[in-house]
Amino acid sequence: MLGMRKSLLCPYRMALNRLERLLAWALRGFMGMLFTIFKMIAAVREPERSARLPPITNPLLKVPAMRLARMIRRREVTSVEVVQAYIDRIQEVNPLINAMVKDRFSAALQEAVQVDKLIEEETGGEDVLEDRLPLLGVPITVKESFCLQGMPNSTGLISRKGLISTNDAPSVALLKRAGGIPLGVTNCSELCMWLESHNNIYGITCNPYDFGRIAGGSSGGEGSILGAGASVIGVGSDIGGSIRMPCFFNGIFGHKPTPGIVSNEGQHPPPSGQQPGFISTGPMCRYAEDLLPMLKIMAGPNAERLPLSSEVDLKRLKFFSIPHDNGSALVSPVDSQLLQAQRRVVEKLEADLGVEVQELRLPQLKHSFQIWGMMMSSPDKDGKPPTTFAELMADNGNKVWPLWELFKWVFRCSSHTLAAIGLAVAEMLQSNKPSPFILQQKESLQKEIEELLGTNGVLLYPSHPHLAPKHHHPLFTPFNFSYTAIFNILGLPVSQCPVGLSFEGLPLGVQVVAGKMQDHLCLATAQFLEKAFGGWREPGSSEASKTT
Ligand SMILES: *[C@@H]1O[C@H](CO)[C@@H](O)[C@H](O)[C@H]1NC(C)=O
Ligand SMILES: *[C@@H]1O[C@H](CO)[C@@H](O)[C@H](O)[C@H]1NC(C)=O
Ligand SMILES: *[C@@H]1O[C@H](CO)[C@@H](O)[C@H](O)[C@H]1NC(C)=O
Ligand SMILES: CC(=O)N[C@H]1CO[C@H](CO)[C@@H](O)[C@@H]1O
Image (cartoon, rainbow, N blue to C red; front, top):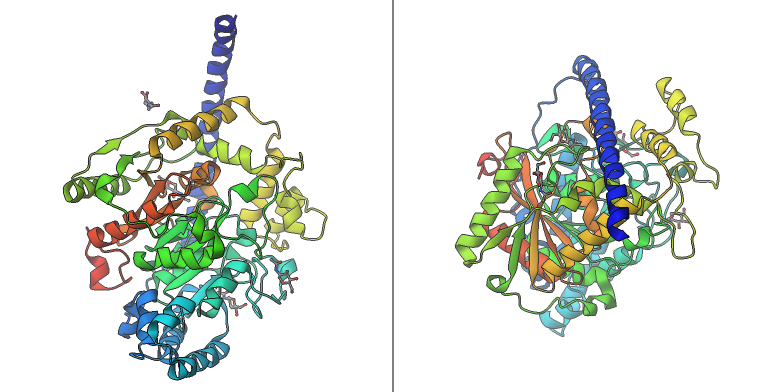
């Protein structure tokens, strides 16, 4: 009986597969054609941006956050000096990269004065301060979509322009309670749903390694300001790669924690449907050693649910490497420089740790984008569907008409970006019927990866198929983010790690994935890779032009 059903289903499935391939091929062809036309217009309209980021002159800007905190506690430097150094750097670079969209410099300086006074008066010694206020006096930056008291929280939506947060998101509040001093908020994509940080309130954010390229999204302002050496630690959130993609494009470290560990409250838009299980708020850092203490602080009491203080012996871990998704029809093949970078990582792990890295191919990964798309629009336990993107765009209980917005956009009358309108159009065309085939792919992928990783496995996977693209290019290759998105659905912790620069001087990177609640394995591997490959490189410096 089963065999018969299988043989009936099989030809049908194969025909569907062929149809899907044909459609994907046609879609790619069509997008490619549009892209060529777009590039011709863009080449005429946009001058080449050739300016470079000024070099970092203040050595304080090259000290990891937790070390800065220690120096401040030991009175080797004042908090005022550190905060002022970062303010100077932001003022120097922000006109070039448009990463910070609202600052609170004078409030930050006042807070730094208070910190220095507190340290002056503290008699309990350094340990007491370290315990209670591990980040005391250290400047931080925050993605604009999070509530930070006194700062806007528009998430790039014109209709939310002028909203000022009256309180702090819990993750931000925890960092402030640990002594962190927010300098301001940074740009993101409209409604945090695109891989380029561009919106009609704050404009477009540039990549510090090449101003003509994207900083990524949605936490792209964070990525850019950190990559530029104008912040040392920041707060981002990730439902499809919004921490990991900007960290990859801007050459820094970022961690998407196991979901449910860091609070996602106090950011816009709030996740709905099954999305609360896929989104993670987490740290973005220039130095790998700051990831773990940041995560510990941001998790609050939940930090105890993770074995964060257990010693990790990398030599005893099982390592796996998946070089690519084995040719998804919609996603571009992985860039050869990224394939090579991942191979170098494998070789380094084997040489230094004496481990054997097992290379894998998981055929289900081919369907990553479809799996993400289906799960993101799935209803919650009570059958309530998630808020649609068109509803989020209207932000008033109604929804926008995507085709009408598109029409208005052509005449420059829409308040939305083309990316957001495109997403709403795509949502309109998408069928709401969940596909049993895709669901089954997801289930089997979940089972296989969880069994492989267990509590002592680490998986390497590309952070993205391509190096930082030019501005607006993602509009024509919108599916490349499936490399990060699949791990949101699987609910696994992932660190993105920079591993040197490409021939063009753009950051290379790799994702380090571990089993649920095994975040400490990702973070330990990130520290190893930082030592082995040099971690973050200053953009525009001679250090940066050295490729690995
Ligand atoms: C944004 O700011 C408004 C106040 O202007 C507040 O009501 C709202 O809760 C804030 N945060 C979010 C995530 O919407
Ligand atoms: C990967 O793709 C190749 C060529 O398309 C195919 O022969 C191979 O079986 C695939 N591997 C897996 C594990 O899906
Ligand atoms: C996707 O990858 C292809 C090539 O691999 C590249 O041409 C394109 O720019 C990439 N798009 C994005 C948004 O990264
Ligand atoms: C390039 C650009 O549009 N920059 C804008 C970023 O946002 C600030 C605050 O709204 C504006 O003043 C800038 O003009």
